Amino acid sequence: MWMDHPGWVVFGTWVAALLTLGIISFLYRDNPVYKFCEALFVGLSAGYWFVSYFWQTLLPRQWDPLADAFGVLFSGRAVPWGEFVLLIPATLGIMMLLRLIPGAGWLSRWPLAFVVGFTAGLRLITFLQSNAIAQLHNSVQPVLAYDGSGGFLLWNSFNLLLVTVGTFAGLFYFFFSKEHKGAFGRVARLGTWFLMVTFGAAFGYTVMGRMSLLIGRIDFLLVNWLHVAQ
Image (cartoon, rainbow, N blue to C red; front, side, top):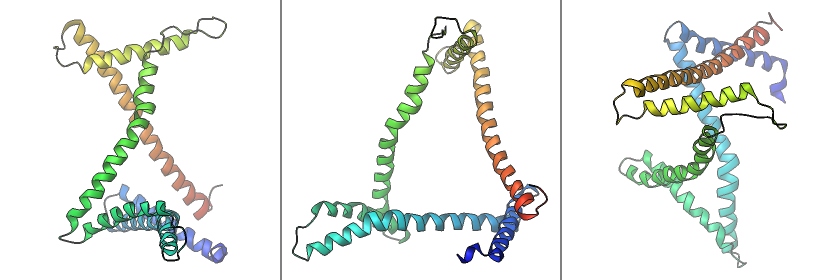
């Protein structure tokens, strides 16, 4: 392919390196170069998503089946009436695009309401199974842990006890119908410590994810662009 030509590879590497430096320039301050790179990234991402959605979803799963069904309808053969169900999502999609037309934008509320309601209902069961029920199951484990031969597992038992204490202390903190005083208040304050540790771990996980992205870009600049490291 023409994109595998060494000249195009070098050109692409330079473009990627300059855009990377443009994004990193935000560490200095918000500037026009960063805004240009950000807008270019968002525009390319949206264009890539639209093209992928059109060729991989809209065309093979929407347009082609409907075109074949309408072709059979006027040919005198047995009509695949089930394919015409696709007219429903096609109509909802067109109604959603009417948001761009002043005066007809209110029609987009119906497909948006359908998408929000359908997505919420579809995700509800998955969320309950992967989050609520799974966390509830892990919170009611026996405090003492044993291996297959009946041996006592000290470290596993300590972890289970820590989870149990943290769960109940956190629940005590969110119990607002009783004033947080005395023994109840001390347990509630212990719950705040568990919550702070949990939020800190989640924040650290997010920071590590961003640092991983930064390390990847620095590795690209030093290895692929400047060739000063391997």
